[in-house]
Length: 336
Image 1: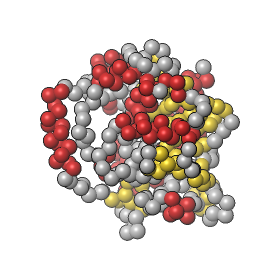
Image 2: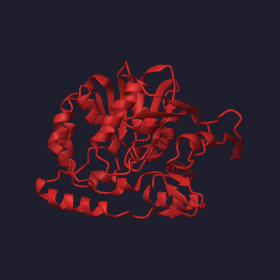
Image 3: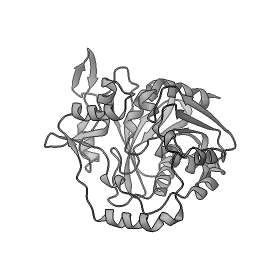
Image 4: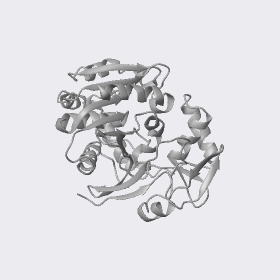
């Protein structure tokens, strides 16, 4: 068991306050982030009006420090949310706000994302499973949890549910499993590209203001209104000493990995999942048009106790486009 450091994320006592749209919000506890997140400057989105208060925790596992957002509640079991690629835990807040207020909820920033520590080298996918295993040893050591994952996070959650079936009570896969099957003949080119990218350090793009970043997000996420895009921009970025805004995430996540996606291995693991599973999809998800439907159907067939539901009008980012509808579907499934 590793030591954990807690801090109120939505209003530490004595913190200054701001007013926005006639609502009072507490300033983030910047001293906490200066003490415990030296690898990333301060970055806490302004709490949304009527948001459920949460806490930020620091947990150490496998030699890295992880930032975990927690919304404590008396209703067991723990519900653990896993974000997708280039996302982070803060953007779950609109979904959390629409879930039962007594639920015990946690959402980590996965390694190298958000306010969790970066490893400084290539990211290997199975490391996410090892991290999850170590975090659950601290967050829920004696009881199985409900796992909810989006996109990349859904792959992590499902694989974990297969190799640790006794640790997962129920599983929710949000718009996941769209990866294409990659033939072994691609392996040489994949390794060459990985070696080439190891020599490169792509410069981080920066933004002059949150509004500039929000405008870029809005173009890519048409389901967000102006306020929603600004909220995501606040979650995703930090302001550097030069006044410009940069995304919270290790640029190495954008590198191609050395290994191909091993579909047969993944399906063998999926067949070991014992937890009832909900596949929650976005009706307008662009991933559904990648031509991987046949492969995805084969993966879904590996789950012995599963149901599928599509959210009308939502794209891939279900928690952006339809947080309330997503929360209702998750709550109904986990309450069964």
